[in-house]
Length: 173
Image 1: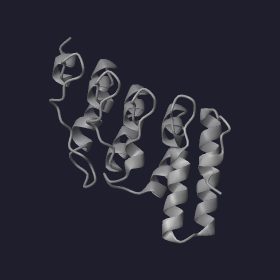
Image 2: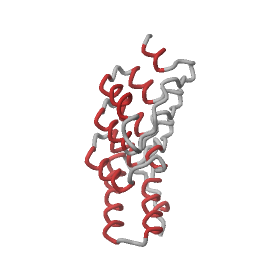
Image 3: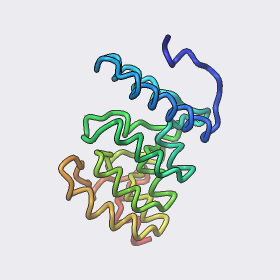
Image 4: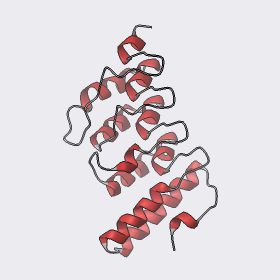
């Protein structure tokens, strides 16, 4: 039975608890790798009404232990599509961690292969958002971490948002 068939709308906390329960049962069942990957993919495909998946919800609710456990299940590397999934505002988990001013989570997400160059609905990258929110610790993590980990995607400092502003332009406003 596919997990996608469950249509009950869940709030953020319920979604995280549901995802953690399903992940734990998969790990305990130890199905063959292709079946395990499919089941894990189905879990992370589940969204709430805002389009937030389990990783988004963990950040929004500051459930860092659950976030770290989910990331460990996903593994590291830029090929992990799930870590860069977007909600209805085109926000990735990295955008949310920056807006929530969670620098330690920003560092972890970058180490797990989050792409710092993805733009949200306004064309803003995580660096744009960190500058706009005066999140100095997040800015430091974005500038240092994205270039220091083997799985990290290099930060492009010259990306313009939809208003034509680069992060440097944004900082001078």
